[in-house]
Length: 157
Image (cartoon, rainbow, N blue to C red; front, top):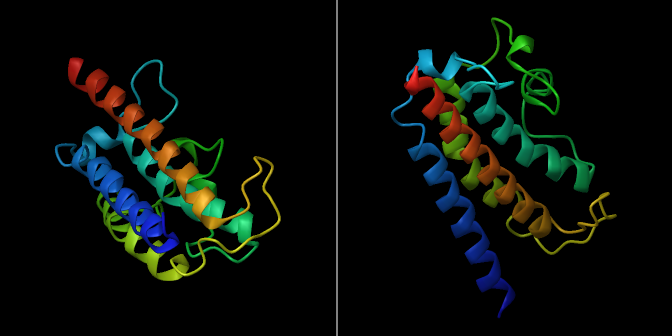
């Protein structure tokens, strides 16, 4: 398969999976996005902020280039954070959804011509942006399921 076609398919998948992720948020209210049901560590708002920053963090880990997100996102949505870390400045549920919606196009514009560029491998052995983006799609799927589980629990009570 030609490289250009492979990259086109990757960005189509990135957008398609993001559209599904956002679709699952359409019927969620701001109030529901804040609830942490018994047995869960995070809420829907945290999950969507985490998905947003995860893509940029992995690109940054690989390229060693400064991230294209506010640094404060790490303290709110980074690995091992929780809604307990939220402040009055933490983006709202609506603001996060807007960021998620525009992210695939921004990623494509910023990195679309660099997908096969080789870097020092990450601890997982990934050495291209293409490999990192595939990993972030998998990660987004995990958080899609978390959101589905959260919605189910919130609405059962």
